[in-house]
Image (cartoon, rainbow, N blue to C red; front, side, top):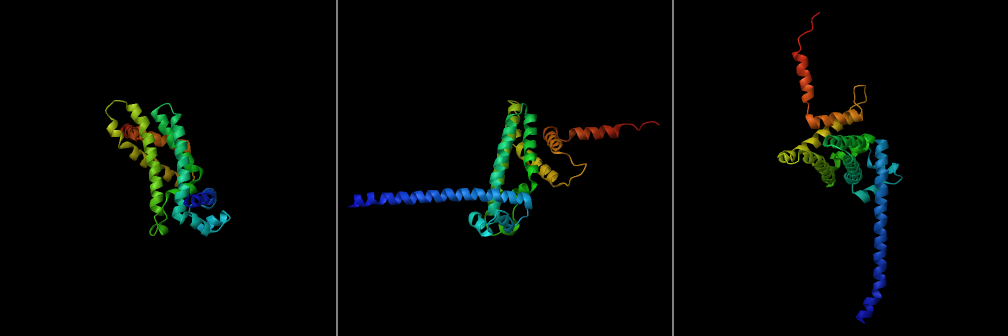
Length: 238
């Protein structure tokens, strides 16, 4: 009897498992659709778009977004994971096509700036923390974790070509400190550049990428030397 009962239950159990699997697949697909819609909405409306505005642009209600993401911080994290993973792939592809460490740095910086410049609103949306909601949810912490993982991975990508360039010079230990500092320079300079209003003095993306790469490789020594030479020149005779 027990064996027959167990056998009799199998079709029902399989049916339940099948429904659960289909429901999970549906939820995952729906979640991806909402993330895509949210990204488009933020691109059009700006990084300060509210959940209600994002939901309206997506053709649904904000309660749907809350059900899938918890709060705005959760939505930021979800969109951020997609955007940052795409940025990471682009940067890695750019670095692999480079011939020298400096070319590799330029390729990575350029890819980073290009991706951020494509949609500054989306970039800002996924890299800022929602102060209004961070006190009572773990969303802001999770967003910070996703962002930290991205920049940690980029730090490693930047360090590898420099280690290969140094070879057995005995300077490898120094490189352990450099990538984190480099990422700070790239991110802060890049975000300031993105936030700067358009003007004739604002460098274009390629110029900015080359300038940041130069700072990473040689610092501001050339500018300092130029200034020193200019100051040391005797006044021209008239």
